[in-house]
Every structure is written in structure tokens, then in C-alpha cells.
Image (cartoon, rainbow over all chains, first blue to last red; front, side, top):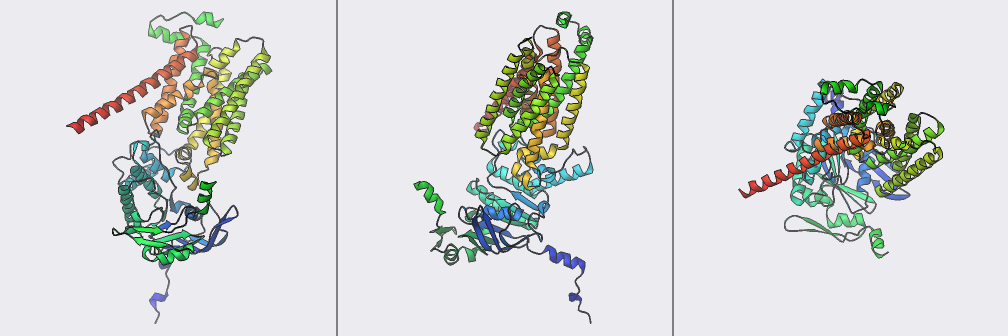
Length: 287
Length: 299
């Protein structure tokens, strides 16, 4: 008898390739200007995982994003992004850089900004009425609806609130149906209620669109309830795991190499105490 | 002298007046040149205002002045000086922008370049020290004596520049409003910035030949700024910017033909007038909306 499960059909192989990790680092290290930012980092982000990247200032959170985008090379170790070397899958990654907001004088509509995410890199002028143009417009409409920005997408983006701008920027990052979404501190400039709303939106997108999300955050609390895993960068290394496993006094103390205490407030909020700030900050203050 | 021949005033019969505008070949040339320049300035101006490079554009126009003065000193056609100097100016500005300094250091460097350009222009005019009445038209424009050869050159340059902008329209728009994401998406942001400055240099060199070096803004900035005020939609905005530039150029040329005042004055005043009207209208509308909102809240 032939065991049917032993035969790997091409379709099955494809399915296996697709269900591989979105990001996999193996003993990776990055050096910038002679300084090692982090080393021996081995992390895996599964397909459709919602992962937060946490850690103190200067720990190399944005550096991690840049390595995944292929903008920075690794000094050691290996990295694969969507099954390929970093930088090889630009079209399948949605990226939202840090601290982007548009001042009130910006006379660009949200819908045009989202459209640029789709065709902004294409040369030439599309013929009016071409089928591709209609398809693009339909996709833009769809993704704006997904983030709940339909009501204000046709207003100049400079006149919108921070939360509304952030939703449109997420729509822009999503418009090409990426398999991996990299969001660098998207909650930074938002008030608390907007932080929770945007975190819930990202969770929903993660499930409905089957996209892996890597979100750099300053504060874990607004996103804690929505996360699958966290990557905690500190002390030149990284720890990856579920939030309950990583955000503990024992794990963080080991990572920092210094006593750290994690306190849980009665409302579920986490407070990390004893976190050493980057030493040059003190130097600056005294000098 | 043509100037004596044309100043006949209006007959107040629109048909006769309009027909008279097209009687003289120099006037037909002026209208053709004005049309070409207005279309080009409308397109590049819209992107210039979007990219907040108005100061760079102004510097290019100031650089056009020593260009023209140097050309007359060397006995060459003015267009050679305009295009040569504006091209070099664009290279210098791209170098300044490419050195990735802070924004204030960049504008200071551009300002120093501008002062040098003016000083050079003044020097060339002094060295020329023959007929000085040419300075007026170098700075403030003239529509007399444009030959059909010049019109042909303008047409070729404008077609090239507008086609370049059209081909790069979407990546240029992306790089202008959202440089970091555009770069991550594979758009050559720095190359586009450099290419745009070159096209802007061409535009300024062309526009200078109608409005003069100092009044380039009347066609390059004001219609584009008005269009940005009127609509945030990119295609509609560019179309409006071209239409406004065309309207003020045609009207300005016609008014200058029937009066003794220079064309640069009319084009500048007309575009400024439209800009003020639009800004005022928008301010009024947002105030009315605010009061309506307050009334709604009170009710």
C-alpha cells in the first residue's frame, strides 16, 4: 500500500511554503558605525501573528524593522523574510515609518495617499477608463472601508486628527495585500482611546487579511490584550515569546542583566521597574 | 519702432480689438510663446509648490538674470544664457539638497547662492555698459521682438519638460508627499529630486523670457498656489494651475498691447488678484462653516 500522506503534491508543497514563518532570524547581529546594536538574535514571526517589538530607547527596535526591509545588512547570522532574503519581497511588505503626521497645510486627500501605496512606484500616466485603473480604485475603496476611514478619506489629510491620519496610513500600507505589515510606533502620537481603537483594528486586519504584523511600541499596555507574541529587545539581545512569558521579572532581569521588577496593577496594566535607561542620556544631562 | 505703432488704445469693439491683437506677427509670436510658457509653468509650478521648493525656484529665477546678462555681454542669444545658467543653478541646488543638511542650513545655502547670482548679474550688466535699457526687460520681461525661431525653441523645451514630468508624475507625487514610504517601495527619491530641479530650471529659463527674471513667480508660483488652494485633487489641481496661468498670460498680453504699461505688471497683478480672491473666499467659507457649526451646537 502506498501511504497517501507521504506523497507531497505541488499544491501541498505550496501550502507548506505559504505557512512558513513570515520572519525568521537565526543568531543575527547588526553593527552600526562600529557599535553592535544587538547580536545572537533568533526570533520567528509566524504567518498572521500579531507581534509587538518592545524595549527601551536605543535598543534597536527600528533597526530590526530596517533589517527586515533589507535597508540594513546583517553583520552575522541569517535572516529570511517571507521565505526569501531581506529586501527580496518589497511588494509583499507593507511599511509604516515612525512619527509621520501631516501638518494642517497639507492639501492632499487621504484617498490619493492610499492610492500612492498601490501605484506610486509606477511610471507613466494611466489611461482614463482603463480596466486596471478601475480595479485600483475598487481596491483603494475596499481598504479604506476596512480601516473605517470612508467618511473622511476625501478630505485633505492635514485637516484630520492623528487617529484618522493613522488609519489612512495603515490603509496605505495594506493596499497591496502584503503578507507582512511593519508598523513603527503607530500608536505614538495618539491619545489613549485612539490607541486602543487602532490596536483593535490591527488585530482585526491581522485575522481577516491573514497578514503577519510586527508592531514597534513604546508601551505594551494599549496592545496587551490583542497580541500573540512579543519580541523584547534590551541589553544587546532579544527574547521572544508570549507576553505572559516574556514580561516577567525573571525573564527581563536575565535580558537586562540587572534586577528588573514587573508589577501588575489591579486593572491589568504592566509596569516595568528598574529599567536602566541608555547611559548616554545621563551623560547628556550632566554634560 | 513697434512700440509707437501698437499704442492705439482700445476701439471698444471686442471683435475689432481681438482681430487687431492677431494682426502683427510679433504679437502672434508673443501669444504663442506665452501659451507654451504658461502650460509648462502651470505643470512644474504645481509640483514645485507641492514640494515646498518655492525658494529654490525663486533662486533659479534670480540665476536666470546673470545668465541673460552674460549672454548679451558675449553677444549670444539670450536663451543660451537663460538655459545655461538655470541648468547650472539646478545642479548647484541639487548638490545643496543632496548634502542632507538640516532644512535651515539648506535655505541659508540657497540664499547665499541667490546673492551671488544677483551680484554676478549686476557685474555683467556693468561690463556691458553700452545700452542699459535692456536690463529692464531682463528683470521684468517684455513681449516685443520674440521671433518665430524662439517660439520653436520654447516649444521643443516645453514639450520635453512636460513629457518628463508626465512620465514621472506618480513616483514624483509619491516622493514629494511621502518620501520615506516611497523609498521603501522602490521609488528613486533622490534621483527624482535632482531631475525635478533640472526641469524646474528649464521652466524658469523659459518663463524668464516672457515675464523677466524677477517676475517668474507670477506664472510659476501664483497660479499653482491658487490651484492648491482650490482643490486637493492632483489631476484637477494641475489642470486648474495650467488654466489659470494661461488666462493671466493671455489677458496680460492683451492688456499690455492696448496700454503703455509693461506685460510683467499685468500678468503679476492678475495672478495676484486671483490668488487673493481665492484665499479670501476660502477664509470666508471656513468662517461661515464655523459659525454654522456654533449655531448648530447652540440649537
